[in-house]
Structure formats: C-alpha cells, structure tokens
Image (cartoon, rainbow over all chains, first blue to last red; front, side, top):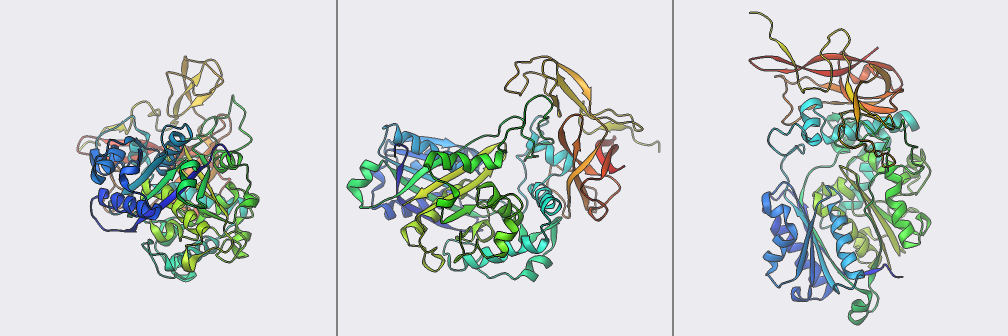
Length: 395
Length: 142
C-alpha cells in the first residue's frame, strides 16, 4: 500500500505527577523508542515534536527542544500543536515526510508537565480568545463540556451513571499491569458512584486527571524497515480532519454551535468523520479491527467513541459495554492500556501513547493486558478548536 | 451607599435592558447565517463569500439541549463569589437560528432541569468589584 510507514520503535516515560521538566520525559521516551527500534539517534533524519503550551518557549518548539536534548545532529525538525490531537499531527507530518521520500527515519516525541487541578487558559486579559472567555464568562471548565455530553447520552439513549461508572471499572482493570500507567488500582462501581460530583452527572472518578508523561515512536519507510526487521508493525492511516460547516454539536472552547440556517448539515458529524477518514485511507473498516484506543476524557465520552468509530450504531454503546464486548477477552477490547482513566492526560503525548499501545498489542508484547489475535487497531482522539485524530496500526 | 452601576461583563455581546435582554450576534447579508459571538469580517460558511454583516438580536427563548454544573470553583479568569456556590450551565437550542448557545443557569439547579424544557434569557450579575456590578446573560427555565 502506498501510504504505509513502519513503526520500528515505541517508547514511553511512565505517567505520573512527577513535577519535573517535560523535556526529561520526552527524551526518556525517545531513548526507549530508539532502543526498541535498535537504532542510533544519529540515524534519525527528521524529528517531529508535539508541543505543550504550559511549559514556556521550549514547549512551543518541542521538536527542537527534544533534538537539542538528545544532542544536535543536524536532523530536520518540526513542532506541531493541535491541542489533545498534537501527537497525531506530529505523526502525520513525520509520515508525510517519509512517504514523500524526503527522509527514511523519523522520530515523533510528545511530553508534558501539567499543573494541579483544572486546566486553565493562558494568563493575561485576552478578550478575543474564546478559550479565555469561556472561563471568564461561563466558568466553563473542560468537565462542563464533558458533563453536557454525558447528560445528552442519558437524555437521548437512557444511559445511566452506572453505565458511565462501568467504563471506569473496566479500564481500571485493564491498566492494572501496565507499567506506564499512573493509576494501577482496581476501582469498584460504588467507588465511582460515590466519588465527589464535579460536573453533573460526572464524578471525580469519571473524569481523567492531568498527568506528566512522555511517548515516542520511531517511524521509517517500508523499504528501510525491510532491511532492518522481518515484519514491522505499520501505520496504515493518519486522520487529522477538521469539522465541516455547520458544526452543529457544541465543542470546546466555543460558546455556540454554528448556525445551520443556510448550509446543509453534513451527513457525517465531526466525531464520526474522524475515524471514517482513517478507515478510508487504510482500506479497512471497523469490522477489521481487533482493538481500539479512544480518548476517555470522561467515562461517558468513551461510550460516544464506540459509536463514532463504528463499533456499533448510535445508542448501542451501553449494550456493548454491558455485554463485556469492550473488555479484554471481549469482541473488541477498547482501551486495553487502561486509557486516560489509568493514565491521566499528558496532552501532547497522548495520541502518540495510543499508537505505542497498539504497536505493543499487535506485536504481542502487551503482557497481562494482551488482546489475543490483535492484528489491527484504531485510535481516536479529538483536540479542542476542531482537531480530529485517528491512527490505524496493523501487522 | 448608592447601588453600584451595572456594566456588561463583555462589551457588545448582549443588550443591557434588564426586562428584555437579548444576545447580540451578526447575520451575513449574503447567506443569512447567524453568528454568536459576532463575526464581522468573512462569512464562515465555505459556500458563501459574504463580507457584510448586520447586527441581529438572537431569539430570547429556546429548548434545553443539555445541562451540567460546576460543583467546584472554576479557575481564573473566572471571578468567583466567596464562598463559591455551585451553579448549572445550560446548552439551549434556538429554533430560528438553528444553533445551540451556552449560558449559566439563573435560579435553577440541575435537579430542576430536564432536557427539552423551554428556557429564557435573563440578565444577571457575574461578579463585582469596587466600581461596578458586571452583568452577563444567563438562561432560566421559562
């Protein structure tokens, strides 16, 4: 296939609240990925860094920051930002460089150090920035948007708080043995339901924490990979779609949806369009996937993703969950890594970490959380301000 | 002490008429698409090349699409009363504009809300300082 690149190496720095410089996590993850690939840093021709906006100037130029920390080699560099989708943007740029024949080996790195508590906007009086204004005028934290979506599922499909809590219970079991996960403790239904309410109907244990962590991938052309390893895992698709006008679902950090007065509402909504493009690129469908890693910023959002990535029809996600279909051992395990529920969100690392997990799963290296027969998997994620992110990894 | 003067928390987003407040948006002169907050340069409908806009008042009533609340005090730049009091946030569908607009909820907690209910726009205090009381739009069950 013309649009495939090889994943030669995957590496992470464990997620936690370490409080150290994000560069350290990125470099540790990069070194782990290079070691996994059996390559030397000096063989990397292109570095794609996923930016963090909470760590000063080095975070805005993450590619160069990591390249300098690894030791300048003259490699070409890029730094990308797409909020939670930053990692997919970096993967997308590296893939394009390889597919264009401009380089053979690329390193993708994302890492973050996060503050305590709610994510807040950048400081200063910024009366034209919707991300600042949503906090100023509404106090609309991220969990406010998660709460709106969760309540909508309850109203539209009869979902219950117990359904949402069961997502956390499942993911907490998945992450138990994951050495890179921050939270490795089995959580009970009762603990989730009794956790302090943050944004109704969601409690503290329904909402992912903010974490420090780092993830990296070494990508190469298939030709380079063939000389290097017998059967590399491949990236078959990278989708970084934006919404289509009118976007009729309220989205962070906006005050309103687009008005649908004049233009026809698209047949495929934004969140459905994210994985759809990835499937089209890969020439595969949801039925060809054996696992998925989706962005469970909240427990309820994981259920939305089941439908958005085509695992079931709208309104059927709760049934899939209740049947155990999305647990390890089920038909299509979702978030075998433990997901954000076990990791917490390290924004620029997260989309890369999803691909690391699929890589290890498809290689059969996931240990106790191994999904049997994993040959292809899909990731899904979304960054505020209209960033889709979906990657398909296959054997 | 005389009451503090009332000022909008943000200029130009809504009228300050306490009895009949209205959200202020713009309407593309070419395709009629409504924008809130205002868009005044280029129409964002990719099928429209409009560059002229008129100010328009949005419908003051709509249907509750979804709702949630803040049980904890949001971080800055939100200016919170001390002590913080939890409040609900609503997403309200405006039929004529075919859009959903967020707002804090005035006079009702999440227990009193239900998707589909009629909501109406009100003007209510957001915060105050030594000089003025700053007002914002909120939604209230109609």
